[in-house]
Length: 186
Image: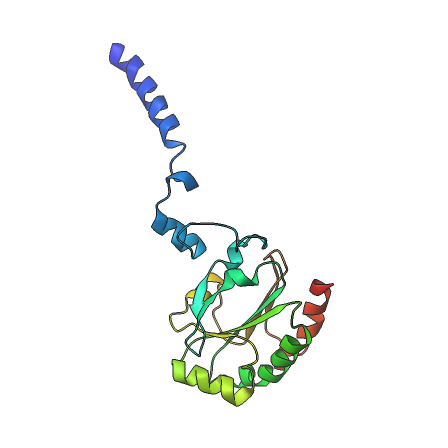
C-alpha cells in the first residue's frame, strides 16, 4: 500500500525535474554551433548590428574558396539564388540576378548558392555568366539547400529584413526579381 503512494509521488517529481531538459542553458557547445553556426550560440551578428534570424544562421565557402558567414546579412532583405552549373534555366537567370544585385547594392543582399556539381564547374559558371559581382557559395554537400528545403535548381528564396521567407520559387530568366525585392527595401 505504501509503495503505491510513494511511486506516483516519485514519478511526479521526476517529471518536474525533466521539464527543464533541453533548454539553451543545458545545451552543449556543439549543439549551439549546429543551431547558430557559432560556438557561443549567440543570436547577435556583433555589437550594434541586427539580431541574426534562424534563416541566416549558416556558414559556407564561396566558389573562390573564401569563408562566408550568413550572419553578416542580418538586417537587410536577402535573395538566395539556388543554382547548378549545368542548368540552362540557371544560366538564363544569371544576367537578371546580377542586374538586381547591382540595382539594390547597399539595400539588399543577393547570394548565389551553387550545388549539384564540382567546385571547378561552379567557378566556371560564375565566370561564364557574369554573376561574380555578388557572393556565390559552393554548397557541394547541399547543407544550405537542405536548410531551405530546396530540391531542385533555379529556385529563389527571398527573405525580408527580419529573415522571414516572403517568396520561394522559380522566376524564368529572373524576370520579376526586382519587383519582389523593391518593396522590401522601402
